[in-house]
Length: 268
Image (tube, rainbow, N blue to C red; front, side, top):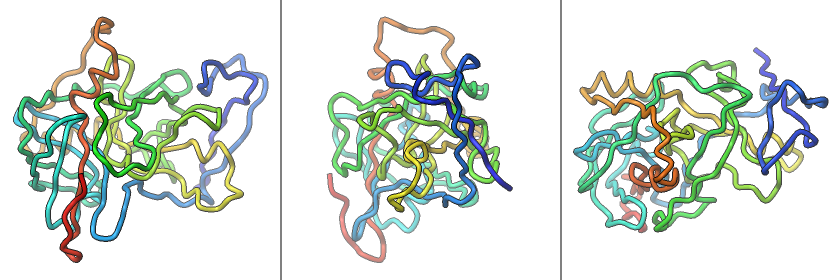
């Protein structure tokens, strides 16, 4: 099935974001059906690196299954925090989700939003490490994007599509960002970063280079409920006195996985 995104042209952009508005006078049509979907963990010999979201006060973490499958050892760390051990206690290979039990102390679970994001109008935020394999910095790198469609590749309704800033200088989802939470403006989780179009071909359209996919929060909460994890309800307050990046940092973690077949230890 052909997937088409109607993307607003640069004349309608403001503040470095794609502006999906009815007033736009120019549209570009970008087809995703010919571009393979790829996962966005950072793989290196003997290890993989990604992100996750804390989902309980006991330090349980949700992340992408492809990040932690076949791990000999897993380590996690909050931004600027101490590295702790972790283990996979449940997973769903079909939906690419894994639940980790961790040794995190004082973890703050992320609130999950019940409703779907708003296509063409809602600004979302993702933690982007720009291909770096190290620990999260003291201040979480959080970047803006816009929801483009309430489905992913092949109209997969388990996902939604989002696109980051128009300018080539604006950060995009990169390898190492898989499993990371996508937040709304109130700090509620809307989804978990799942992957992006394959941009390995130099001629790939620039909009595709800024496109990524996230598993819907509804699917994530169903998986967690099936394993007796009750997520925190969404916040209805803006909590403007606390910067969004600070709120997001409390529940975002870095994950390192040492592959069993290599026997290596994760870098920190």
